[in-house]
Image (cartoon, rainbow, N blue to C red; front, side, top):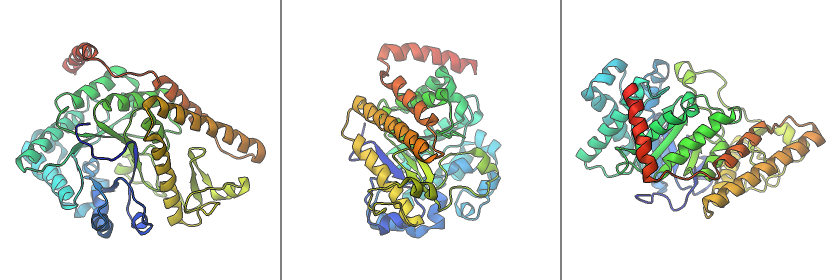
Length: 397
């Protein structure tokens, strides 16, 4: 890495909206907040600064083009304004600077964010005009930061549709576009895939995502978002870690920006069970006699919503800590062993208690690890040949 932002890798980055982590005195490498959440709960962001906790602020520009999301109470308080016209942003650099880049950067600086996340929109595919727009926004953000003498590491947001994952040449094109001209100018990436539930996704999509993360991680930080336990698998393969909330839904969906569905997230009767990489109903956990050794379970299961979040965080961080000192080969072996143990444990629960747990996703995740175990980064000659193909693809679009 060009500069060491984190004392160890991989890491879990909790996305927070309340004070529970700070009240419990838990030290984390970094926390993440959406920009509109810093308006909704300003005391949370302020507390992070007071305690010296590094904070990343997502500028939440992915919501900017969707009126249903943009008109939410707290989002409307942001300085992006109500008069956003997508077509104008596509063609007018001054509009992009004044209505997107400056508000996004200024808000992050004012929140004492440890990095700058460049504004970006959701792009279904590389032939979507917003894919090119995102590259333009990244370039213009870097120029603005240089002009303003703002010296913070910069991360790019890559928000794509799942179809990209199924086409190797297009995945390579994405990597080339972000790592080519920006190679020496950004520290890393946040990667989000639309409607990808890693427990339900097929093997081809999962392998495609793993390949994308691995390629991007050659000399940059790569954090994935909204992926649940599969983030741990990607962290073993080459990712720098992953981020999620501490109990809400873990799948990003553009449909929810267009018209937010009701009943989002899980109610208080569910607990994350790291031994099987899944959530389980508390009634079921009591039936099987589940016992957790973390600081918030007292040898059983967490007894309220706050402790469920802290349980989730402690167990997530424990996995990352176990991976940190290992080589990539050792990380893959350890993660595969954990998944195989989960398969066996689920089988036991099903046999002994007729539990409803499944192993299909676990088997697919193991297959991803097997596929990725012998991956190597491309050599310079490989990259030269690839660039020729990518230039041909670019000319066809």
